[in-house]
Image 1 (cartoon, rainbow, N blue to C red):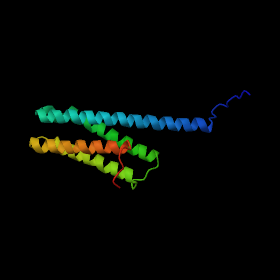
Image 2 (image 1 turned 180 degrees about the horizontal axis):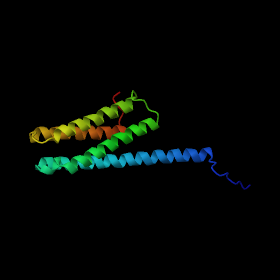
Image 3 (image 1 turned 90 degrees about the vertical axis):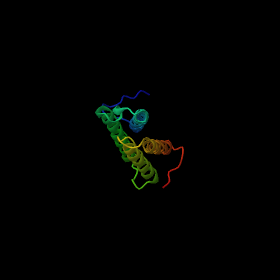
Image 4 (image 1 turned 90 degrees about the horizontal axis):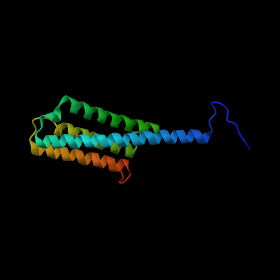
Length: 144
């Protein structure tokens, strides 16, 4: 039997597919941004260890800040889209570990810190980022 769809009418199956597609696009975008944040963090860490002054240049700070804000915003958007509460263990643990990543990174990449302390803090930031990624990919369970 041939059915002719009405203009503007969408079946429930089509609506579900659109929601799934949007969710996957947002999730893939979040993963790409996370990869870029990690890449910039590693590059800035290598520049810090090499003693390059460009580690705190205006362009490097702008790129890393923009990517970090986009990563945070897309994560919050996904949490709202999935109707997750900030009291949820997954959201709380990823939020805390992400904030630790940012705090350790900001302190480690400041100019004038001894290299040993800066590299230790940078490594702690890297561990916090990896922990966040492992929780987000559901490889390990969150603490809370």
